[in-house]
Amino acid sequence: MSEDAQTPTGDTPPDRLSVFPGSPFHDGALLARGVGIRFKGERRTTVEEYCISEGWIKVQAGKTLDRKGRPLTITLKGPVEAWFEDLGDDAPVAKLD
Image (tube, rainbow, N blue to C red; front, top):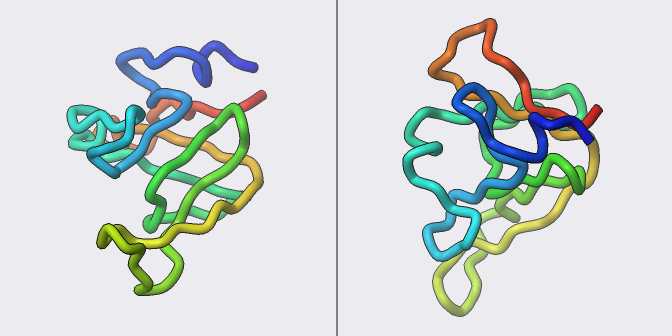
């Protein structure tokens, strides 16, 4: 595993991040910077949570909600890459090597 995927630095996103405020992996300051996600070589904009080291993303499953009013998600497995969008096109990418 690369060091970029293990520890967050100023230039690369953390190994795991969630948009849900109740999650222990939620970090509003990092999300405010804008995090780009590439999953299986395709850029995704609907990612609710990701984990680089375990190789998965969670995306919303339609418009269905759970009993607490949160969207239901499905887990998709494959290679995940993440970067901060505020750094521009040459931003360092966090990925599993």
